[in-house]
Image (tube, rainbow, N blue to C red):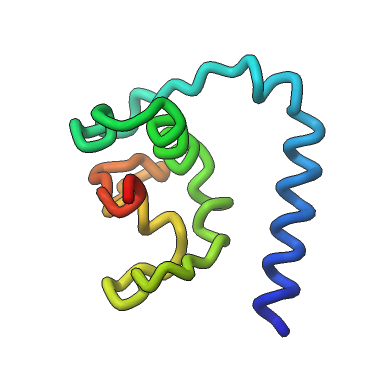
Amino acid sequence: MKRITSLLFLGILFAIVAAGCSSKLSDQSWKLDKKHSPLPDFVLNTSEKIQETYVMAATYPEVVAQVPCYCGCVNDGHKSNLDCFVKGMGPENAVEEWDSHGIA
């Protein structure tokens, strides 16, 4: 029950944020901040949507870390959806190493 309540809360929060930024989201060009390691080839060789998702995970790690992952990657040591995209973070939440699980 706690999991459902958490997912519902995150869904509502995401809807509110998306509604408030809807005009910006469709026009926004997602750029990776220079503090992060560059996207690796395994990401750059994918679709634009997947590349944007990696950039969004780096830009909003606190939000992505709140989303549980249900694909079974918990067996690989993943604790949240953030772990599917980011393997290592440094100071100021700078991505130091990317994870390839997010392209699957």
